[in-house]
Image 1 (cartoon, rainbow, N blue to C red):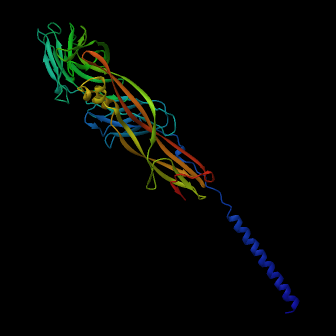
Image 2: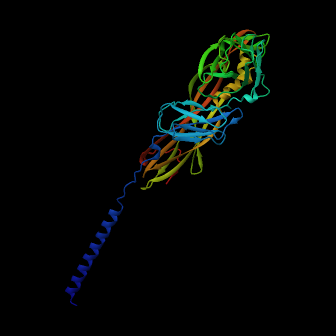
Image 3: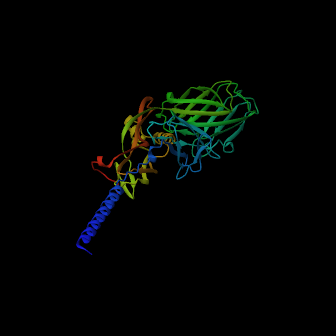
Length: 432
């Protein structure tokens, strides 16, 4: 081979090598031109939740069907807890039913229309009246005295219905039993005593005034102001009659209710204890949030430093619900100058209305984080202070007894996604 040919061969070889180098470099630059994967965050889906507990006289009640409409249903478990997901934050009618219990419908109201807000609705159910546990009396020419024992609490003093001579036809059978009625967290009065009556004949009416006596749980010098007592008579099946005036009988240490002549004897009698209730909002603490096995007590920051999105990110909120006293009934009574004899009665009424005291629910949320984004997530308690004011007579002088609670009415979920380059540090859940 000549010298010229060798030079020519080297020249073309170098040119080929240079071409291959540029070609390879071009492919490499093109391969690095990636884009961040942008995905829809499931947290952006509009959802609201109706949550709460269902109780009876013995505590949390499992197996209660809870429903909104015909298709959205669930059943209570874990001590009477339930949760329903709905798509609107407008007020909703919620129905509760269980065999042997009085079916009940209450209204759930959302305090906020923020996404993922909760309406907390606690309900106390009661057993249907059971006349087999009551007392039956046949009226004579002298009238009739019927005791109404409590169908569940045998230690409770019975209410007494006193029909005078000529007050009802001789031979009329009257059967009565005391029982509990359902109540929910929105109640504006507490059921002090409920009596269910049936008669034979069913349409028997009182020809004269007649009286009902209900024992005072305090003393003749310490009792609920009779002006805060209200008697409602509801005929079977559902015709409401006018209420009657309530007096306090100091000699008998009892409340005395006089019913009008012409009143149908059968039906339900509700002696209600009225109170004033006010509500104010308070700043709540953060709920703990569990992510990747670690608990955070403020805002969780989840960083994604990759092009690919993080999918199916699980966040568990340990949400606080229920209520607790800040001023207990016994303390409130002592402040008013009372002995505390009525403390247990006030407690019972508040327990029925407010439901289960403080408890924690683990609530799971699913999120996604797009490429090179950071997700901020937190849950803050919605807290209200409730003030119950009862009127109590102490030595015949009316005093206000003020009981206060902190109520945990769900929580506010906050989430926000930002570019990773905007992240300025802080508590970080994870960094990919």
